[in-house]
Image 1: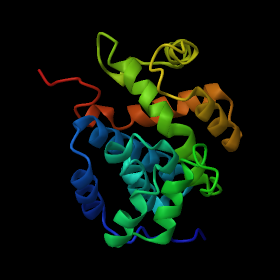
Image 2: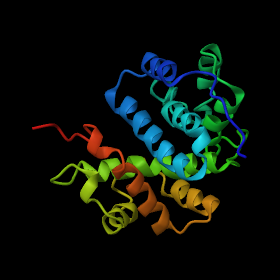
Image 3: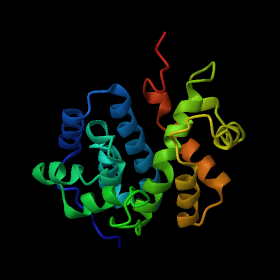
Image 4: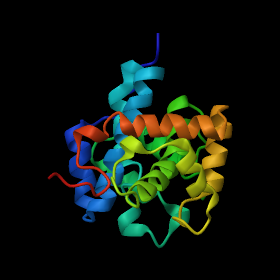
Length: 202
């Protein structure tokens, strides 16, 4: 039986914390996107802990908007904020693990949840940037072939670390194409239900 993980705070409390420290709609949407991607994978790998996986995704970049000038300490600024809100040590550890590539003093991903966060977080940004360039502005008609072209073009979404995405795939034991396909599928699983990637209702 899987270990039950507690975030120490509800999804509503986590969202309130996110919006208290992030005013840019892009950053809030990114948190929600990663939350839903994490929930998608949780339903396959750890369904009993879907809520925990989701809150990890929602809060993974909690401190980025306020401290983007200091990437080395990204997630460390978030730690006291999460603690004050009642967040658990497990939640803090999982969030910190996704920035272990910036700061080697932080815990490296060990749990499947942490590896998936590490592998998909940057990738969701690349997919989102690619999707807004499409006529449909929808992830529903996006595919691996199109993503591979954007991945190889280092000038496109230059802030997205291709090395982190490659390292994440290696951690999971997945080929890049598998990571690409499964992350697109994860994003397609919830995109029809929300106004995603700049697509507006008619």
